[in-house]
Length: 290
Image (tube, rainbow, N blue to C red; front, side, top):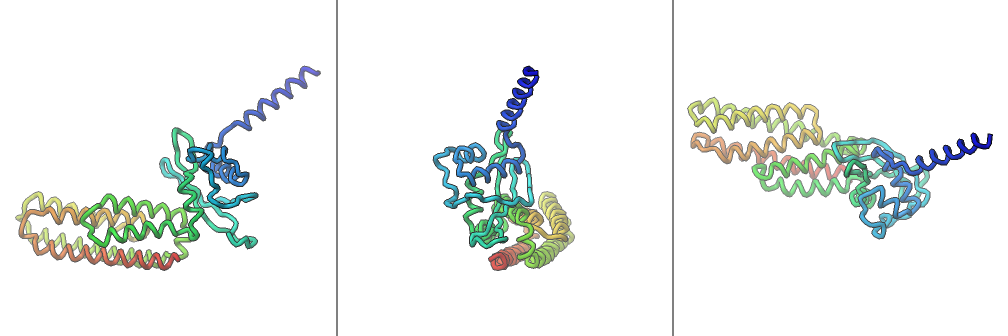
């Protein structure tokens, strides 16, 4: 009888030890333990669960997290990155009020870790859209030059903003849905006008060099496909449109035949209209998000 009891006791200890040593595996589990470690002011645990390289660099984001218990919302996992809407008590301490931040995670060597610095920026920013506004400002400055340069850079920044908006989908839809719809319709109209002009140029210049015609045919096809995606405008569709327009501008600048010269001036003017409308959209969006 004593032997049987001893076996049970040992087994219980083994199971308890194994459970205590098991590491969180999913982004949600890692995020939950990370915030618990913050609440306990446990620098070692925070470093184990995040990209914080040294526990001595733990600063708690300069806030007191004692007994803070967050609620978690929408989870987005894309390849080796994840974001989790995290609802914290309001800074005013008002009962029942919550503020939203994003817990960002990255997968490194098969383990999910909280991106300590990026999550900290989300915590420190007073508005959940402040970091997005910074990206908008930078992209607006880039677009003020021309769509004929840095197509990859423009699209990458658009894609990043798409992730930010998706993570804050409720907030973004509530504050900026109308601005996005208006911009999507305007952008779609401008792209359709550009596509029709390109097709008109092809019809009038059937004897143009094959290389030029091939480039313009590809441009017209891509403008049509990208325009169709704007039927339901979001930042992913805007990213695709920006890439398509930037590549169109690049092709226009490389045309060799003089017969397209008058059209090039028209196309440049249309791209300028797109740039102006895009900058206006960003300004409107920034105003809506404040």
